[in-house]
Length: 499
Image (cartoon, rainbow, N blue to C red; front, side):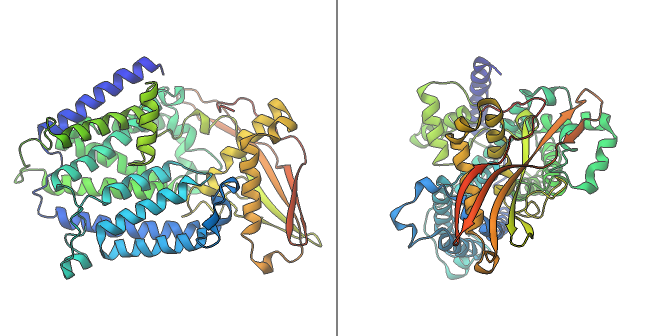
């Protein structure tokens, strides 16, 4: 998609967002259940965050980059930091010093994932929500703060905070739809049909959905239209309910069909908050407050408009020179928004699965952190686990493509090689003492996926190679040495990945 088109769409989106805020509130701040709804959202999100951190623990050895070791890491290890973060999440759940708990949780998350190999849509969603929880005054009711009469005075004006939170959801969804428009697969209406059949992501019990390719075309376009139209639905409550309902179905699919755990749950909570408010308070017998949410001739108005502009530049990846760099840094260290590129060609063409296999003497073996099973289907570490385990397939894919294109020597000097080696070494460090007894070596196996027949109205066909050993690590005296190359990865028919 051309830079000029991105810039034009970005300009229109900024103007529309400003118009929405200058027109009247999208969210009914006079809704009798607004405070209770925000409190319930806070509790559910905080508990989801606690569970996410608990399920992240098997990845503690692989999460942080080995080239970013800091002097205080021994005293404040990642394991201790996650424990502290979980305690803060529980404080947020019960509403103890609510805005402070939200703020500290946000800062800890920024610190942890600024040092990580991984920063995916999961991290983006959790950072956005954590940022807004600082200002949403979710502890007004249903909290220890309310019982004890505690207030830190950090909450923003409720009308502005809640409406900005809704706009954040709308522009994130717009980014997802806009990126799909740049994908030939989605423009042909084949997005649903391609991805509902992915053997390494889709739960087997839902693969029957591929039997109706024409329905898949309608579902593909319904998803794109709902993502793009949600922001426009700021002008119409019934349209907003319709779009939020469609997108809630999409979020449910991310949980049930492909099991994008913690992405689907966070998005679903976000949508449920506003869908519930819209359904219960925006139909006959209810009214919405009138008057502008924000005056743009005030210092606050200028700050908000500038922030919206930078966010939109980042979300739509507008080629705006130095301003683009400002937008990238602003969003990364504040609200966390980034282009939502999901289920496009880069996730379909040129991808490899991986297995980390521990070999023991005298010949036993087992998989470590199994994101995929021996058949290439979803493994145990996909169901209600963070995306770290599944997402590692993309650095592995890029390394495999680089090996086949440039050879072993060039690939071994790349950042992708260091990422892959760090991950396998982290899996070794995560073993308990009794699990290391008799361990001889670790092997990284890879398996390529190819897709064909992705034409309109057809059912795409997927094929996999056999598992092939790529890297080997020897274990001597309790230490890992290597890695050594074990062979070329299988070839893929075509690739859309930039390596």
